[in-house]
Image (cartoon, rainbow, N blue to C red; front, side, top):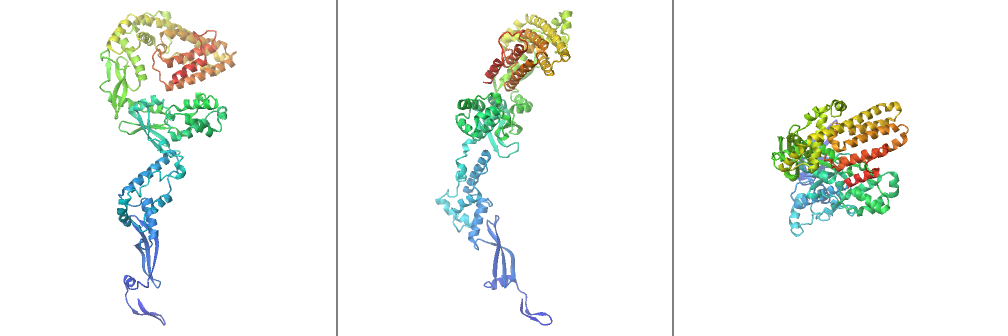
Length: 637
């Protein structure tokens, strides 16, 4: 610091001494100028700070000093405290109201995820106003706040506690209800599955996700038929039904416009617990007199977020597989499910049995799996040269396996007649049996013996469940197995003889200008009738029907190509019925028993072919498309 500056030939400073800026600031406090900039929230200090600049007659004494801003500008400091600490959460506190408010904010944010909206929660400005109206003007930092709140909460402990309703936008409050987006779904038999939600368009987890423990996967699939629409939450049903109606063919959709109004008309009459599509068909028919065929719906065309995503969890609650198709997921995790069930039922399962030495075979047992007590079904399984006891998840699978296991055990104990029957086949018959889908003649005779054993089991009322019933079955089978097997061989001879004639006719069809589509259809039919194990699949008593079906195929070829137009029309009718049957077979597994209603539909389709393509041959009872569809509908009900 110089007391005087003199400029002659050069600039000279006189009376010069070292000066400390801090001393100058203290001594000249009445002369210095103070400027403040960049007020900001400091979470570590719990207060608002700013940058200070101190000058004396333009000479900088202090540059860039951080100072507390609360006493300098309490209005701005208070606003920054509320916005950063209370609204944005940039502070460390253990106050109970803060924890409760964060939980309420999360609840409203979760509702936004569930409702797929971003306008339900109040914005930061509204949240600021809620705090601003309740906090005194002199609270500008966490220290001030703690001192004030220590006293204020004694009189009004809920002053700063906000409910989810208070944090919900008023415009959305009447449109979205939390109860329409539940945390879980309750199925029958006391089964409850948790639901989770995500609003992430384009991502696999977008929409509703159902967590399905591996232990109850089969039960869930049985109760819901694996249909993802069964898990649509009430809050999304209006959007789903609108999307479903838009997938209908134009000629049906035309009678339902305007679709949003129609949805609001029928949706209140549908119980959330009943299957959606049948209920929707009923209400639309009641409201508009329009009948919607079940095959007119196209659920796969609705947006993915409206169809539930299934997440299969293992016994340790770890994800195993995720997807929209529960049937495909069951197939994907089948080895893991089988291993899990085998571990749970290890004290029940057995292998390598050659006689009935396991007491009774119960239809249902309860096993502990992953914290769940679930029903399981013991089955008698065919192991080739032995049988075993295996626990399976569904009764249908147990029935199918037990029938084959009982057949194998019966042939093991009563004695298979294959060798004696093969020796007794005359040369002419042996030649006719030479070319068969089972391969060698002994394999074909084994197939016939299986059919004979099936007939004996069916006559006895089904597979035995205890040793006494099995002993009675064996006593009945010993004198009958050989006779029934020989009879089956004679019937198969007629089938294979007719099949050779059909094969020759199909081979000559291209030269007669028979349409390729008809030839392909006949080849598919032949493959469905004659395949490895076809004798047991058809049953001994149905073998004459196979001869008739094959004869009808030859009759059809004789009428082609002169009857090509009608043949194509009939072929389309059969294809439509077959498609419905295949969908039925996907939803309802066949038990493999002779009286299986699903298998009966399959043979009804063969009779329909005879009735359409070979009316001259005839059917034992009236048959039509409508009768087949009715049988399918009865099984779907």
